[in-house]
Length: 297
Image: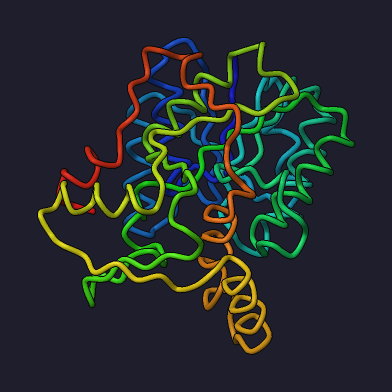
């Protein structure tokens, strides 16, 4: 089976390439914008992927003519394109090329809460996921979505934590289950999804751990030995009002988009309802406590 990974030098993309190669029976094409990239971090990732056995191919999702040859002979396209201005048009170009070249399945760049349950306007970044998914459905290509909640890797950077003031702050009652998965484990699940025919035209929902906000605070304190002051910021409705006001005055998406992610989680609206970890029992995902106990979060 031949797999093309777009966004191969990204935080998650390079891990997906590595996880696919670990399976040992896949021909992996890692797509980069420039094979001769001089950015030290990207250069290191490109060299590592090549050394592990990936074929490095050059292409640009905003230049459709570069995508057609890359999709030739490919069985599955995996997109790991980050949140930016090319997320929607770039993935649409990739879907078109995949369709034209007879690719069997497409895995879009989701790796998030269940955006299918959100309304347009709930989250500016996940709106892009919704738009790409609708385009993918209309394309007729077989697809698999990979939904993993929030990345555990950035857990302490979420609006729940104000470590500068040793405070844990939350909206709502703090009892809604929240889903977290590391990028390493997400990549492993993507690698399994690629060659799993039972996931055609459905979502693979996975979670390394599921904790309420209050359980998350307790787990942090247990893992780190640090006590946090608990602070309620108000109801979910008040959170929505805060986001609406902030969005109206914001000069950039970053001023409110992380709160939009938290809204999808603490409101329960984007919660994963059909967690399928048991499908791949050999993957033992890291828990929040294990992650925080590593001491590098």
